[in-house]
Length: 517
Image 1 (cartoon, rainbow, N blue to C red):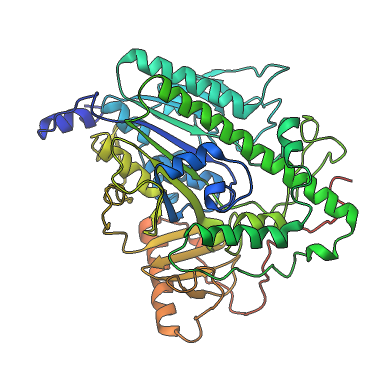
Image 2 (cartoon, rainbow, N blue to C red):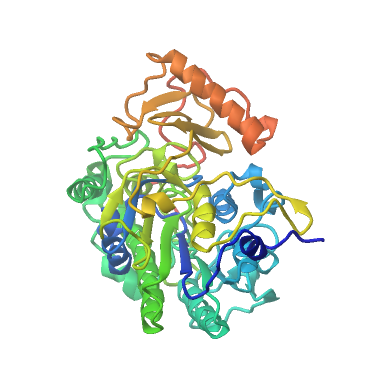
């Protein structure tokens, strides 16, 4: 046979009784460039009542990891594998959640950003709306928009991607309901990825809220995190990086500009939360909210890239192209260090909210400190969907699943976690084994941290624990070469000059007061 025996048939053959009525619907939402501390339920001042409500009635993870980059996180989320292990953006060595769940009898739909090769309808999704690109103009879109495999022309007026993605997600849920099948809906919002585009009412709601600056904002977010017992231990607040100026040293016109662009970012998050509220309301209206497994995460930490142009246009004008940079990104990742692309905690720590009234056995509003990773989502969804991971698919041999189900955690149990978790993007790398983590930023020296006492990564133990650092270094190279299949040019030895690598992305320039001019 060209295709392997379907996961559904495998289940029947092994004696499982699969009943659509008892299997949950699944809604998986991924935000884009959302920092660890950018939701109310993770310490933010941004109004996110709908996600906060899901957290209050569900479960939050304090140690959930992504890959620190947009495309690689999507690879890991969809395949349950590390990025190169799955064939990178081609997905050629993996199979997607949608492909396996569809074989098991699910109606599979997606709305949002793809950012991989091909398009979702090539990879197991019965329905798709969104853009294939990594980012786009939120009001005008781009030429990569597709609807069910066909080119979609973005309307000239009245369009906003976050709203449109939700519109089609609702439409697809209705189509799934008429099919009588349980459904899998994957919503990959492009928000709050730059450009910082949001409707005027959302932006102006926050205008002036950030006039106290990033130093004060981080302190306030940290205190809220401590008050909600978000951390197993009160990790210290990491200091402001050397390349970020103290807020009180900025000229008044620069402070005003910084307040404005952070208000635009907050408006994007606010609007995304409102749209998630639309999804929840629809599920409740249809009477299926109780048996819907709802998961929310982010693809990487806050983004430090200064790429602003068109500063003279307002962020609700499609001609604008605002970003924010390191100062606000550092606040977005409170209390951690580093950012998107880096494999320190600021780059790889994601909010993760799980809500499932019919299946979640933890106390409402509980926080779990057990580590999890995007590679674990596939195994989790196949477990609840009673689907089997295949050895082959469409004539291709599939890499064995790397992720492990999160179901024990959802059941209120202690999960037998991974022996280690591996991280890599470009010349940023890390490995975590138990409480110990070894990390290198932008090719700089290896740094060793004790995650049990120092998750903010402030006390580098590499020199005092050289044998342990050596073990973890060897483990990273083993995982990179023999598990992930990382090309040799990405496995070169790191630099050995301590102090040569400052707390910054060297491609990011702090152009205070000059951006867009």
